[in-house]
Length: 416
Image (cartoon, rainbow, N blue to C red; front, side, top):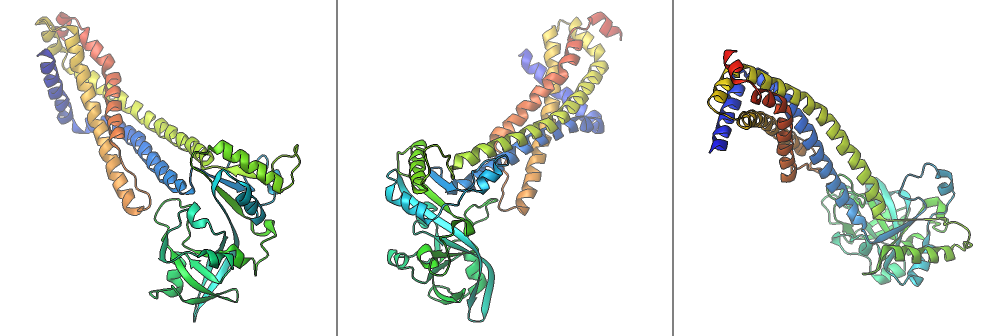
C-alpha cells in the first residue's frame, strides 16, 4: 500500500518536473537520450553487420579447407616469405582428389583475367574468366537460374560449353533467352548452356558470380597455359566428409600436398590451409572494438545526462524541502522519502532512454530505406538493455539528492 502511494507520488512529481520547465527537462534528458542512442544504436548496427557478414561468409562453408598461397590472417611481417610461395595448381587438386580419404569434395579454380564476349553485333567487356573443376556447384551450392550445369562427358572432353553470370548474360542478350545461343570469346565459339542465379543484395558477397564466365578446366587448358601456376593463381577447396574433424582433415591435406610438392621433412609448408573460423575470429575482434567505441561515446553522453538529471533532482529537493519536513513530521520514514526521490529520478531517466530508443528506431528506418542490402534491426534484448541501463543511471543520478532529502531534519526542513 505504501509502495503504491510512493510510486504514484513519484510519477506525479516526475510529470510535474517535465511539465513545469519543459526546456530545462528536455535539455537535461537529452544526454541520457543521446547516450542510449549511441550505445543501443551501435550495438544494433554492429550486430546486424556481424549477422550480415557472417551469413555471407557462411556460404564458403565451415567444413571446408581452402589451400592457398596466402593465409587468411595478418601477414605483413612474413609478406616476402608468402609472396615467394607457389600457388596451388591442378596437380595439387588431382593428388588430393585421388588420395584424400577424409574429403567428400575436392575442387579447384583459377581466374586468368577479364575477357570480352560477343554475340552477333553485341559485345560486353569486363567479364572475368573463371576456370573451374567439375565440383564447383557442389562445394559452393551454385544455383542455376536458366539452363543447366555441365554434364560429366562435357567436362571430361573439354567441350565448348559455357556458363554465364546473371548480370553478364543480361548485358549481352537483353530480353533474349541465352540458352543454346553461340557466343565468341578469345576467337573461340561457345554454346551457352546455363546462367547463374543473381548474387543477391548482401553487403559482402564472397561468391559473386554475376560477372563470371565459367568454363571447365579441361576446355581452358587447350588455349591457356594453366600449368604456369604463378601466372594466374589458383585455389583448391576441400570439403570434409560428415563426422570428420577439421584438424584431422588439415593433417591429411598437409601430408598429401607436401608429398606432391616433394618437400623434405624439415622444410616448412609452402602453402596455407585456411578455414572460415580464421576469418570469423578476426571479424569478432573487429566487431568487439566497434562495440567498445559505441560504449565509450555513449558512456560520456550518459555521464553528462546523469549529471543533468542529478541537477534536476537537487532542484526538486530544494523546492520541496518544506513538504519533506511535513511528511517526516507526520511519520514518514527515511526509506519512504528515499524511495520517492529515487523512483522519480529513475522515471525521468527511463523517459530519456525511451526517447533514445525512438531515435534508434527512426534513424535505422531511414538507413534501411537507402541500404536494402544491409538491414539494421533493433532487437527486444537491446531495447530491454536500454531501459535497464536508463534505470541504473537514474538510480546513480538520484542517489545523492535522495539521501539528502531522506536525512533532513523535519523541524529545520519545515522552517526553510
